[in-house]
Length: 244
Image 1 (cartoon, rainbow, N blue to C red):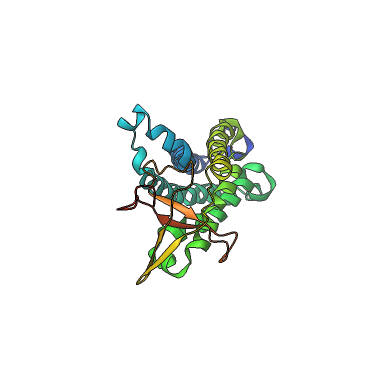
Image 2 (cartoon, one colour; image 1 turned 90 degrees about the vertical axis):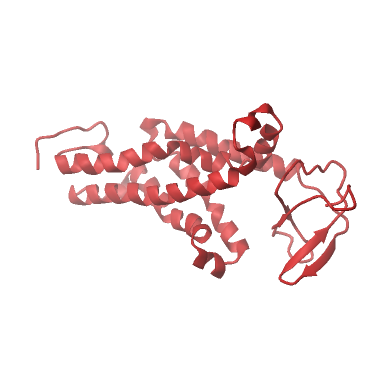
């Protein structure tokens, strides 16, 4: 199987029809998913989303349900990363170039992303793992997505993926820092009420806190753990307007 020689870069050097087909299968999936790569991070820039939701853009964009878009993008990208990696690894193996996996930045960054993907996606995707792994552990593993995003920045420098992913991860990081330093409030006292297998928490809204339609908040209970933030659905109190 010979007669072809296309070598724009050493990691995508096509020498035969088989290699051309494998390369096409790998690259078409990746290029199609570039918008989803960025959506994964921008959809979780919650402070930015909240700001945009209060503008006229909310009439055109599904800003009130970005989590579902995030889940969809995560499912597709979780499959695409494995698909993309499989064809590259198969092509390099058959061409005697498997050393690219560790000797070249494209191969090494792809290998790291491939290893991280199941830890990020599977505990959130598969119901069996969701039941067996605590929310705190699943959430911690999900934050490996930041490492994944940074690694992808170095995967294909000739295709400017660094700029695309750098902007997406940068927006998410800036949004997280803003939320951590300017959107965290201290509540002197909380009222906990046990409801069978759930807990209802009531508090007086601190100065500056506005719900603005958020679906949930993260609460840190210092006497339980100073480092853990637990997600609680949030709604206004039925009888006390200044309470949640």
